[in-house]
Length: 179
Length: 175
Image (tube, rainbow over the protein chains, first blue to last red):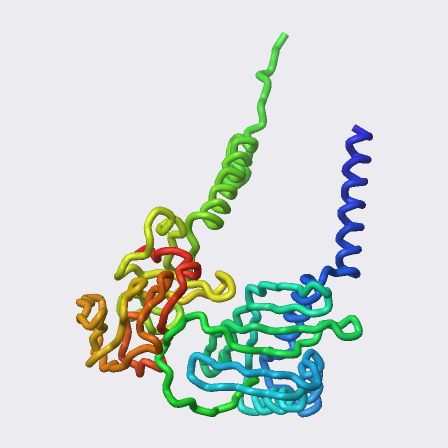
């Protein structure tokens, strides 16, 4: 009985140690997953907040991206959203908070491929963005390219993946609402 | 000399309701049910909640349906099947009807879907449709299915549709 109890205790200690080790030394995949969750959490909001809070959030969101970034997303509603710098992302985020009372961003099902050097990665994921107050929702598959700089995974490129091919393509409407 | 009958304590009614008269048997039942649900969810059916109007009137927004993962193990998707198409994963999927099969040339003319130039009879389309377009490179490849919703009242560009690779088709939606 005592032996069994000791074995269970040792097992629990080993599991706790492994969990702590993995928490503080995450694999690239885990680190990227955490980073994407942070991006989604920072971009989402339930109320616009004050001026300083908005600016802080927008600045924090921008810090997840490289200073020179290539964002080009073609959404199902035929709008194209482009951004080439952190500043643009900040401005878009501030504009969004001005126009919409709430916003929810989810980055779902990330399929992560880490490069051979271990310092770059490509992630295919499903982006779901909605403004609950306006009942407006977008679902789009995208590809993010990340690079590890000073130990942090930074997004350097975002582009669209077309889930369905051969869709009719009309003239584009340029209504940049979000990056 | 008197002897009193030995009294056995009856389990309370609350305990009987919660864990049954035989807790071990109840536990086994719970484990079997949980494992069965897990296996069904992982390998057989996926519950989905419909969002958006593109499959009206066949499927309404907010309704709950199931996708049969095993439907296309032994056969390929058929014309008229309603299928679930995955994006990056299965958290969010498109729910569309297969109307064009691999190798076919597809287009819309005066609201009717044409396969190799011939109109397709579509009894499930109940609302008026005025689509008139030829998709980019209208011949479907060998592993591509043309999918579209039943509600074609909106302009074609506002309706998510197009060629879906076979590998993206997760299963058939059950009615």
